[in-house]
Length: 110
Length: 113
Image (cartoon, rainbow over all chains, first blue to last red; front, side, top):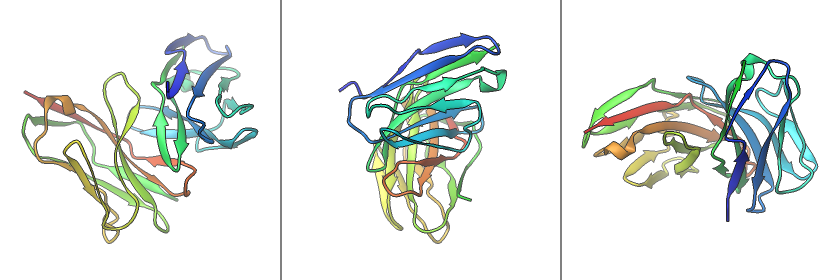
């Protein structure tokens, strides 16, 4: 099993550009989530999904969209990037509450 | 609302020293509690967990006991190694098996030889 994979590993965007952070898992987990990690603030939940076709907002959803068309994939979309979205993004999938994290995507918005 | 508070870092220790990282929480009901570790350049890994009061989680020489009376879940290790240098996150889960976690701000541990 590859576990949770994320692409790209690094990305630099200009303000106003859009992009999609990819996340995939091969463990057949129903629950998937996106977090952002900022210095001194721990990880904060952006969006989560409890199964294909079902998504909901977390603590900091503004500026981000998600969809869940399959169990395996849970992409995170930035429609118009802002410098405040500079962060490290982690995707996670869950089995009976234990979360498995991907390696992260480091995003810089100039 | 639910929250997790960790002691501020960074924590700098010499090899073989005793480690304590404090973690307290605010939650209704009976949350599950976790410690995650993040090594440089990597994602988070589950270190240990406890699902009910008085449970002790342990792994790789680390321990933490779920204390409901003091709403605490302090992380301890008797003798740290340089390889333990990492960021440690305390977290709680309120919602059954959905996996939705609330994290503390993280504590950086640096162990010097």
